[in-house]
Image (tube, rainbow, N blue to C red):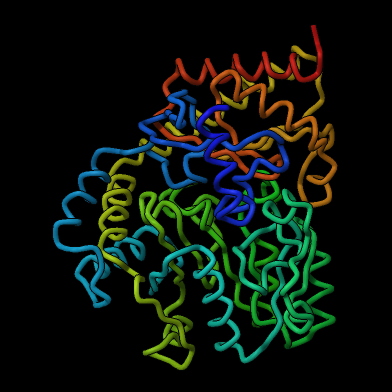
Length: 430
């Protein structure tokens, strides 16, 4: 029995399911989760000392690779002044200024400790601003584990086979309306049937939580227009895409301005962090400026702010990072497609910039229903074949992969080769 197996056996007696976030349990791919000991640059190392090329990057924030030296130094420098004050600091002001400079739609911003906190607060603010109760979200989009969002909630629920969660009240569910992603007509119908009742529409401008799913041409523009027509607050959940698809996130890349934006992941350079921000008139609803209450002792803590400032300054000052990320994503995708063609397999790849997913289905994937057509068992075999070849993927078919600039051309070639071999093995293609 290896160390990961030993640790998992012990963890299951102490932690529900043996993990602190469900997807880590490897339920949908089978086998025992790897317990990670360290990471550097493009590599992970497990408790048994095995090395893996990393294609998750802590679910997004390690965009520059693990233990990036300027971020590491910023954390070391900050720690000497203590870990948390529960009081304002200069770094919070600097972070707010940097975010408002980088993200096109954000005029004011509030720091929190996770993406879930950010989305929960954004919805509350939208409801307070509009004096309406209902929310429209899209099937397969995941916005954290707040009660309002656990309706057709995407990767976490899909991976566990639980589309909705016990503990969410019927009243909460009744205020959450759902539509298929990329379906403007469905949104129009919901707005018409709930006239002057919808406070907000929240969506991932590029979905990462049913796998990587791109908005079809005109979809984001159409949602923006519908929100304007009906007085609805448009919220972009850019916890995954923010500072990854461009300096200003997906909204910069697609040229669409939401009213509110939720952020996370990269802002903390890997530390627990989140943020929400947007139009000043909406954000002025937040206490103590306004009546909508939201608070947090550790929000804007100096260690996370130090890591995030180092990360964002680097991204802001080095636009070539995004050129490189796009090139890596395109090279990997081209290599994977060549592998599929060589093996005579019809599977689908979605990619934008440094996000991509190989879907085990022959149909295009543009919504939740398409994603559910995937052969999950087949993906499990593929996942383990890649793992055996030293490539660490997300342990679920319904997650996007996130690459970092630490991937060299040689490592990209290794991943492409591993993919080709894994496709042959899992399908018994000689």
